[in-house]
Length: 181
Length: 327
Image (cartoon, rainbow over all chains, first blue to last red):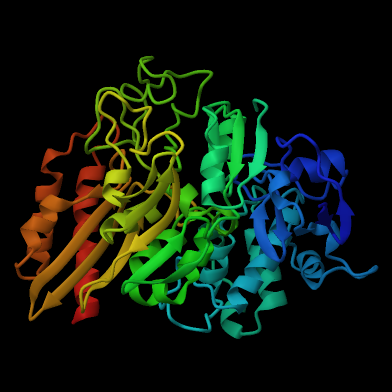
């Protein structure tokens, strides 16, 4: 059984040592997904597997046989960028851009987790069905994605503008970006 | 990474049969094992993928039975865990990142290895856990993150898991299957203190597979939570963490279980503090005295003396928080 990358069926490599990240970059030349630390600490390699965010550097490709992987290259529809991609441009959600594909894939997975009511470390009440997407919640949920340029405020603005539609979550505070780092 | 073969287990007996080869490792989400293999600290000749085995989370004798292949996110998200075992939901949610929690299995979390920087440095450091008998560079090195309880001259590493601290406080039972059959081991007996064999993290026999975790029911009126102290607000290992279960009736402690993370080679069940509290009044003074009694035997190293007062304060604060909820 192949693996599905951005809708296309692809054969798995024979060598089980190949990570999902290396399959994407070195075998398929999909260089959007980035290698940062290669040890699960930075989130630059974040992709979506059947809609769930994972880090592709510590994923052996062979384990994802038959699964549907979405990378940053698979987010646009035709010539139209994903709304979050547009928001990153609008809100200066990056400087060098290296962490950006991981940030964007991670935030899309994060929005789905929030939508289904998954609590986080900073959620006060574990039993609420609807979690208020405060700045603190967004920062905690995005803490697996580092940005060394310091674009976290723009990243949070872009995510809030795309997925959150309340005033609370749009208010910017000086403390919020540090919590994400 | 050393070459290895890969096989997917179809059921538990199949996994145990496939793992009969000596240098075989069971593979969960890979978030720790793949990293260790890339660093050549682990060099298995064969991997048996057990992520297709039971990931079910179901009612069991008034508690829960959790398939070892359940993902960390799924366990923290489970309704009964959030309602009945908040200490477990909070411990899991305080560990790693969302991406890692989506990948990591419960079984893999139980068997993750220490993040001691000297263990992780095969090129430059001596480590008895990695190469038995070689010596330990952490003992005389930078040991701010290391153990203050139960360590030995051979190893001062700490156990990295948050989930296991909660499971220790919950009296969890680990279901194991191996070449010799099935058995059940208490979570508090699954991990070892290092003594003179720090290369052995657990008491599992070769080829044994963790198949499930059983959570017993909690006493009526028990409250639980998890508190983690770390160097940054998120995505960092614990300096000190506390998982606690507390039941109070008319101001008197009827049941208390306390486990500590970040302080020892295994999740540290604070039985001295528990004994000092059972049947006593639930007051901040008693919480502090019990915490101090627990830490009496602590042996801080050059850089981690701060962990002793930090552990005392964190135990006191966590129990205080649970009393507040109870009032």
